[in-house]
Length: 88
Figure 1: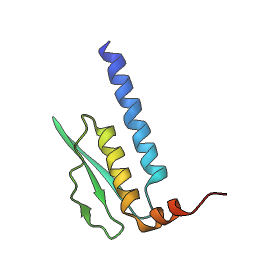
Figure 2: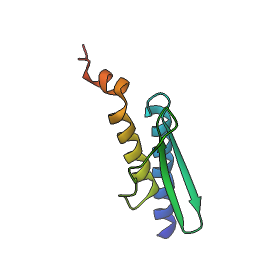
Figure 3: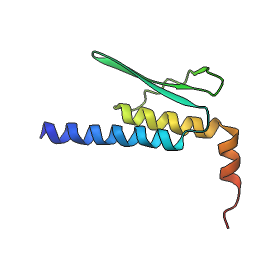
Figure 4: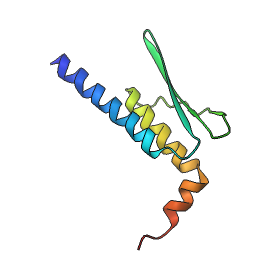
């Protein structure tokens, strides 16, 4: 049973990373730092500034990655402008 849970976690993390590669606005970066017993998801603006939002509300790294993607998309004016354009 634990192996199934671990497999689900790894698949979810992989999907979140693939989502970041596809959905992050131009110039935004996500870094995942890992050490024994701990880790962090860091988001950087196109200017290279670290976003101090503390993406740690989830229980898992993949949730933190998704939070960072959502934040970057919401803050990036180019992405926000594209979302406002009506689709025909």
